[in-house]
Image (tube, rainbow, N blue to C red; front, top):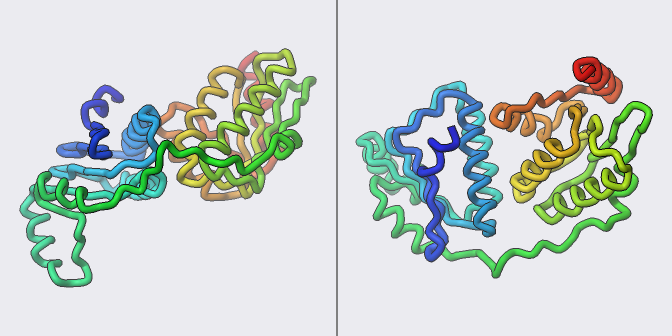
Length: 271
């Protein structure tokens, strides 16, 4: 599926534009939305630049009702984290009629056009907010992480306490995950069950791409199975969305006791 997305995302480094070609694409499910947006995030991360102008081709795109919530959620998060301005174009008669009806009214959208040339001209009017390669200042010191990692050697569980912790940006993610990897290395034991407390955890849009990337790498390298617990949160909802496209079971429980019980089930599955 990723190969289908690959040619639909292009970058113009001179004009700082990411072009997303949704033309003729059918978002038939939440999982399809998440796979596509995962790919966009990965491609942005690979550029080494966090901020881009977005040029989006919506011509003949279809979104089924089952995909709308995920499409709106992931699109909003992507724009908050990485967009300096978004302009869309759609050559359909419906869009032309919509623009004509909305002209000179409060409903007028100045960033929707019927052709690519006008959309590019609009982007050219927008100011770049990029700085020379964003360098985030650290929000936390090592001491903030130490107490949040604990190992139960008898049961083979690494417990990670993300409760009431905020990942503000990629630097926070890298600092915390570097610490986790160092602590695992210090144990002399390569693989553990992961028990993760997400109660009150916040992962801001600027942190999500790196959070997903580092979490996936950590799980592949060191996890026998991961169980998360959080009594209802935006972070939980986001994890469930992303699980649809990243081929993992979110394993989210309401309480620590329920999460531990799930780990014991997984232990039996491994036996």
